[in-house]
Length: 83
Image (cartoon, rainbow, N blue to C red; front, side):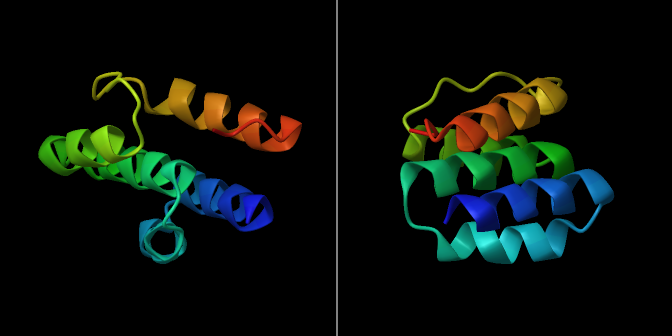
């Protein structure tokens, strides 16, 4: 699934939030929840972002951390350590 999650991160960065959202909704893992949280940060939906970060068992980084979160997730996926 990490290939799909990497594709979803590319979608987030290119503005295709709906496409990324579909991928995130299909992934029921903690990493999928993390991605879901990132998407809601980008969308400006703090309440939902915080919910998905809780589901991912990750500390909510704040609404201004989207770039850092995308880079962190991408790095984790590429190294195979996304959990």
